[in-house]
Length: 294
Image 1 (cartoon, rainbow, N blue to C red):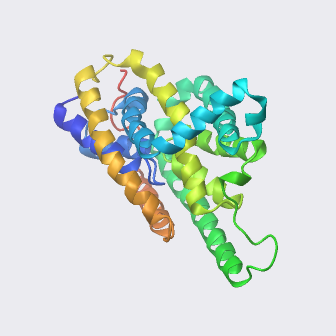
Image 2 (spheres, rainbow, N blue to C red; image 1 turned 90 degrees about the vertical axis):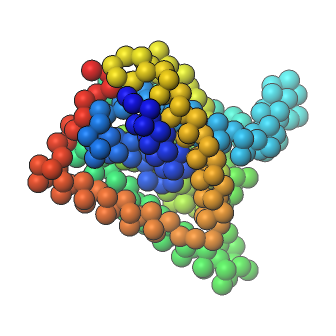
């Protein structure tokens, strides 16, 4: 991998990690369109450490409060009813599905799941799911705004989060093991369908990703240096992803407070259709680019 490739791929990772469009799919597609080697699952996982570092800094106050409360709850039983302590446990519980499935499906993640036809399918299908969730949330918010006196019209916040919803969020996140699904897209869609506000769904999505991304990146470190992906370009791409990702997450949290997800829905569907056309007309091979490990 050249330094230019690593710069472009780091930029793509930073731009797409927090948007509901799938960063892993965009890394795969960028390489395929440019005629480069597939950067591979290991490169993707490690560069995500850069964007996750942006999450750690952006949400540093929330994270410090949650971690502190969680540790205190281990010693002090009276703290176990504290919302922040419970949120710490819920992040752990919600991380179990992707941890188990990530190890179980490792060979598929690094092989068949990177087929461009599957990526096109997940882009479209999850785009439709996100669109439905967004429209239902918008309708519920409008109804709540016009009938605030009626019970049951409020959207849920993280204070309403329990073990059941935490696990559902976790299984939604696990879907992102397939490129094209999008970690944020799947978890935010799940949150909206469960009745959470846009801001709450996004905030928990980003918090939930921290253990999974850091663990996945650390696990894949051993594969750097194999194939055409080396340490220097990988570290450079990770640094680029961090800087760009921090700017994107700040913009995205402002965006979702008042805007619809529909622009991302239209983009996902259009990209998926384009990808099907390119593969169907043999402009692109469904296996374009060699695996980074080959």
